[in-house]
Length: 506
Image 1 (cartoon, rainbow, N blue to C red):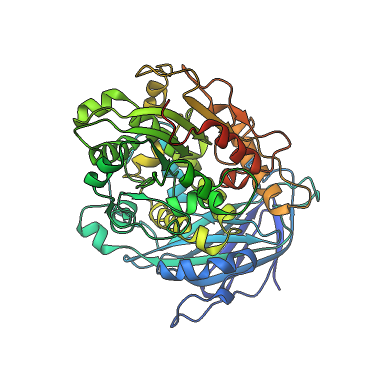
Image 2: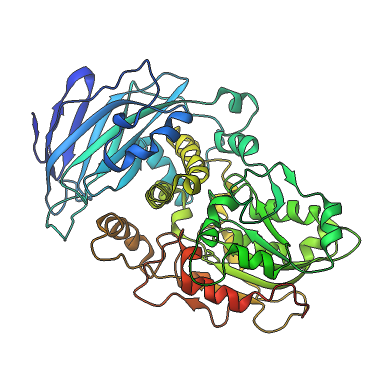
């Protein structure tokens, strides 16, 4: 097997080139799965194998595997940057895109787009503006180059969170239908597969795919004599995946308890999270409410859903829509990026994808499938170099002036009692022996420079400019609660039980 020396380049079979900066490795025999069949679990190594059915359903196929073994790094590459390996491969045809999926020997999975897309993302984040192009850019060359950073791992005084890696080159079709409709890939996909829907939720129906629209406004009016509990999910998610933790057996009030407490009036708000701004989501919800009477709502929100919840609770937006402002008794932020998250910056989007891919791949299939589908569609769009049409993500970017503007006003609005807004946050610390999450935490922590739940900064949930939530519940340290696991935690569920009053009229 050929050896890749520090700061050298190797010519491999079929025009594949691999080079390094500050890295040495043994390059294994290239793997080329059969092209005439669908993607199989055997085409992917280690922790990526469970993703095979979802990648295959999205039209993705592995065309090349590059095994790297006995990886060792120097302190820095010869350019002074983080050490890296670069793989140069033939560019796909005009109707395809490609991306690299890295899997290492501790089970960490990471996505890598070509260096051109990385440079575009950095330029946008640094204020150079968003390219007007809404379709995949024309490739100028005959090859694409993928850079894979290899970071020092203090636990082994060696490498990149694993002394072995496999780099999978994955190709996928570019959605011609999206371009024909004048839409970017994610927007086209969300419109087809993630329509807005408002449904009555029970433990028995939580796993059901909601119908477009959902419960009629007339039915909401019939039930409006008592308060509703409204569940609002976060980025990439759905009600069935985002709140699955509440349906699992455990200590503290679960979904069945909340349905009983609210006399069957628990609503789930499924909505699009990637290509539309939270105000679009909130307007859709408000337009579904009765126009002849205000409804009383308690909002239990997760992640980006908290930004939607803030808008639902804003009487000014209700006036614009032309409906009576709902009487919001409680607004509970669970892991909400009220102060934004650095992972929503375009140059960190691949890290955001890495985090969700790794967190979701260890969850039960029925919980993770819907969310991973959204992740894959965003991977496809970014891999083709298209960064437009993602207002749902940029709404959480700390560099977006709209985030600062939204936090200029303190908590207020309609007259409400003290404590109507609550918050739950976590500063994640990986458990001993959990090498995969330790590796993920080591990648994410430097971006935040402060406590976080792997996606959202801890303090940013409850301190965001003038928008400050008193007496937040921060999961006691050391906390093993990550961004996707709040509702399975008994302490969080107990706190929600304290805060949510149920059908009682206050």
